[in-house]
Length: 227
Image (tube, rainbow, N blue to C red; front, side, top):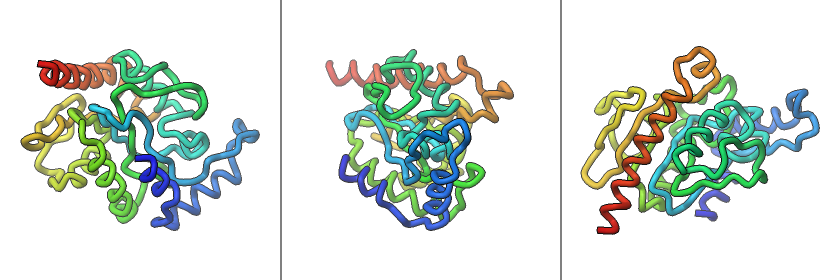
């Protein structure tokens, strides 16, 4: 898995995104002018023996593209890690930089796209190019029991990565699907973007409910593994 993450960081398949990430790292945001931005594809993060997989959209330009760790240094991450901490998947409820001591228990976080896209909108061909990495990760994540997809793009991206058509399964918040015999349970969730959280479309309680459902799936499999 470490070797695969190194390949992701070195990826140059999407020139538009590589140029954008590097440009943001040069110009920076005034509040982070003293930071040395990551400015490259952001690797996935977590426990390689995870039973839970979380799939997001893409690094934020001044979040993970700055810190080098997914969902770190922005408000989306604040929402996500609070819920994961309350359900035992994260060691702490917030993450500010890649050296702050956060680690994940029984969980792995990846993205549909590993590069920050302009306006948080990757192009369709960029999504297709990056799907290769998710497929490779899924080959290595052999203990998965549940997948939480943050947003419709992540939901559809995961389905395509496992060879299913997105139209086969309806996306809905905290709506769970069995995608096939032996496949992990797939749970949809609204993405914890500022657009969703500031308008109340997604609340802390709503996101917590998703991870409580995921926790229930993982706990059920733990019990069956021990019996």
